[in-house]
Length: 70
Length: 389
Image (cartoon, rainbow over all chains, first blue to last red; front, side):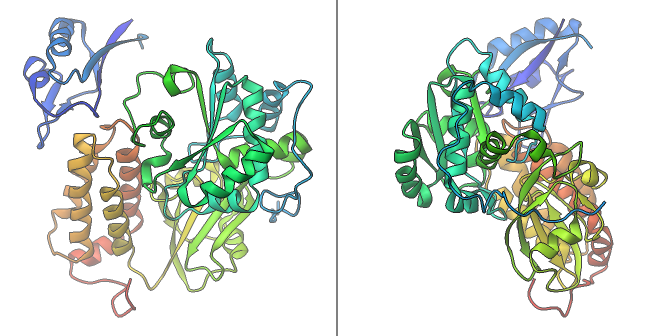
């Protein structure tokens, strides 16, 4: 099992916290919304900051989902 | 193999012999749908059997919704069906509801035809509640349908679970296009072998096509999957001008060259990145400019954003503006690269497939009209001198 970040685009307003906590995974697009650098699978090493990003998103627009390992 | 247009029984011509029911064993509908190889006619083409089975497997009693919203401007087939053969839609809806043991049954249709359908449902299918769909492009999107049925605005929502597992107020929910329901009604009456007698072995059955643009008799026609594009256009009276391209699958679909022999099926259209979708075919005359037409459609799609997801709200208008610059022959060689950059930026970044469908459409516009793009960047247009496009 591995983890995957889910972005609720209807809730996201581009506050940018996630891109600060997870710069390895998320870039900012020109409008301030998170832009996945390479998909949304969370590497084990980033599990903690990913959890933090989920917990601290002011719009509650982030979620961690488990996915079957590929 | 020659394929011809179908005679009777047909979706738009089937007479009303009274309600079709599978009273002894309503669940037999699942077997019929499986054996027939029926797929959804709303655009995605998902196997109907699998959807029915998934909804029926839920713990809670399911909700069934007939989706006739048809927000697509180039499509008229659901309206034609609901106007000309509402009995088939109502029968199919009740058959599906009985097959999955549904508690609530809804028919979701444009406001102007809702009263007539409400009247019809009152006598033929009293358990069906008719709900009005707003006149927007995305009102028929599955999660938007559910929001509307729940009494909220018809806007797509974030999907953490499949609608077949958790839809209307958390109940397993079947959202099925009204044409698919009509096929179920005919299937219950005539059986899977009859159904499979048209179409191809891999893609059996017929579909309703809406033909518009440069054809002599625009309208809705029934044809088997695999019908050559030329034959389909001939059902609509044939081309009214030399054609350069056709848009297949609607505004979320793809352009392909107007080649008469191309089979209109998933298999036949795959190499063009297209699929029959909900059966929309728009014929573009040789005298028109494909880029002007594409920019117009991209502008429409940008205006139809639900306004919820940042990349769609910001990206689609930028994309449309860039296409308009190309269509206007702004001689800026960076424009095609900018289109590609924006396509990558919006793809996959929304709660619904509106950005993705728009990406598919724009990408096919750039590919199909690549020679026109080069002309425009040099300040010319092949349609120049032609009348307004």
